[in-house]
Length: 250
Image (cartoon, rainbow, N blue to C red; front, side, top):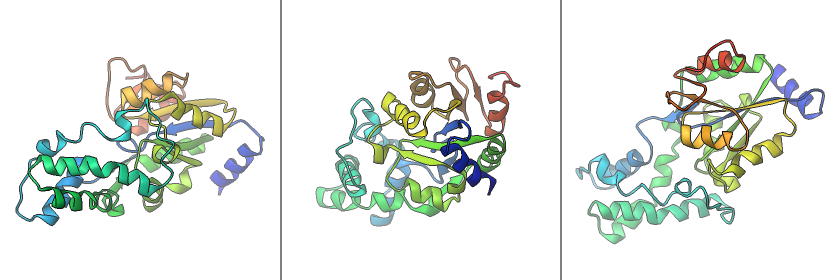
């Protein structure tokens, strides 16, 4: 109840919000079993039982073609989930062909990837996600998600019961801007208004931290360490102490 009241009060201008921008994959949550390569492997195993293909064989064909591989090119022309997934079917089809499948079967299986990858039961929160969000909410921080993700991100967030902790979700599949494109971050700043303080928190130095800092937002690298990151930590539980200045950045 306090969180909802705080959001209303902030939006009505009773005080300036303090905003934390969170990445999703690898920061707050993860897909159990693996990401895209694992999803294609699962489709392959379902449709062609006994066909054993190593992960690196499929992965070699998934290094380009996704919208986040060209963040400099907005895809605002894509207006629906159907269009978004349709643009990826050739990528999946080529991957299946690359490991030896014939065209009709590769095309059929490419259309199966969406259902497997976006399966809600596959998604998990990290153990420290909810407790960290709650602690920071109690310190009057407002949380938003900024993610390069599939169109089903909002459903995934709802399934994980993460929604009540978030004021807004900015999904590249909907906005058309992939991090680290500066416009992805500027859109958050524009929508959230004149915030008193803003931080970006994510697990990718190049995408989350460098991207945010390019528009003046300080970043905290989590789950990993990086020699060029001013602030980083391996556990989300340390984020509050970095933000309030009571802990050094490593």
